[in-house]
Image (tube, rainbow, N blue to C red):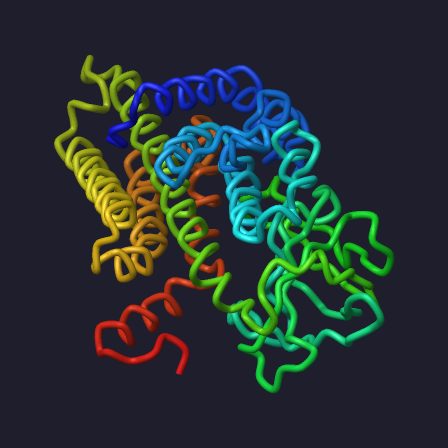
Length: 384
């Protein structure tokens, strides 16, 4: 569906091979134990995928959103936790790339598989309103000092870099913000609590506490006071479309698992498969239709974004919610179609059912995203 060129298809084929060999075999164990997918992320790093959207001049693959979505889709079919970790890395790399040569050492390290990064935006005080940090940087000689209560930091304690947000030291409102690169060995940071989620159990989305972390000025990832511009203009499309691709991958995996169960499971007393029941076939059909609709929306958004269409902004705002809400419906239908076999974890659908719930509550939540969309439709500023 992604209409990739030859180079892009080769990259996706390589991602599928890595996913089948080094990600899928560990997915159930990662979920069961709620552990970080060390093997999966190691394999992605060794195969160069941490440099997927790093410019070729820095040793990366130089790919854009279309290829990234195709790769995330495939990863999510095997292990949504790994896909989510990788998506957050791509988002932070997009901010690095927009910053320019100052970030070249870290971009080169990412391309070499030695620098995993992530976003650390949401804060305890402003919750899912990720664009409004309540922490405020303090200017010091040569840089800033930051103290903050960050929540939902994917790869907390595992990443080498964190794209953090905070109010600009000279700012007067939360929207006058800054983005900085915090490195894992910067003093004053700690993971505040272990991660034990209902779904996405492997992505280590723990809260982090920053206590007087000092960051040099050359680690700024935004112009002064313009963190929001980078958040919305640079990173948000990667975040939104990446989430949509992950949700689509979850839907596709759910449809496949349900189809296999219905065509293999038997009603011995009737000498027929479960697929002989019209109600179950109808559920499967509705799952396929919903999945294809979500896929079509993502493709339309990619086309609009690449062509510079005026419709792109609205489609990008819609994309995460379309994927998230579709994944909720499709995984629910899959559980109903497969019945007790799904509920008792015999066929693995329960993992996709739980993982699908993450996107709808991840900032911007589906409710908040719909408020953005509604404001845009009414000709209002997104943040009023």
